[in-house]
Image (cartoon, rainbow, N blue to C red; front, side, top):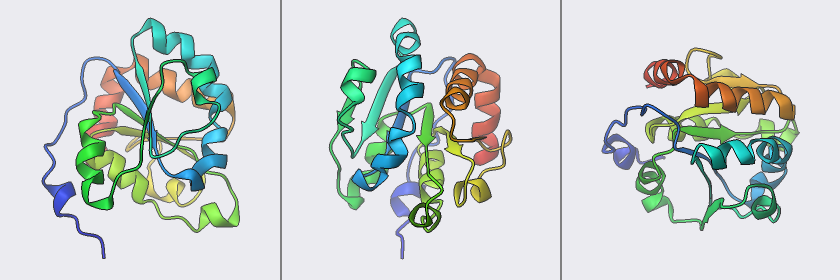
Length: 173
């Protein structure tokens, strides 16, 4: 089973007055999923720089990320024993959970959503199961169809609307 002790011991973060960190956590098994975000991140790169927003990829180094999102931080994978503390220490404001509609992706769990929430982030996820079953769109996170312009809109919405981010965070707890 999953030991929830580390997750339960985390301080309950509160959303700040502005978005400072947007990120993704996963392994190379998420390569195709993160690739879906490439056009959206390319469109957002200048906005992130202007607003001093950090982008962090935890556990996976997409070969294209440095070209698309200059200054992106890549953090190497860590052990399961330190993952909860490490994810929380990043102070993610917005966490991204792209997921394709393949049979393999549909067999995944929604654990990532709960990890992001426990670490204090508001999740934007692909509108496919298992994420679509775990998030109430507009109440506990945001669901988007896998089109770059919709990812851009959702990320921009949370960057601009601090009250919505706070409400989503509180409802997801």
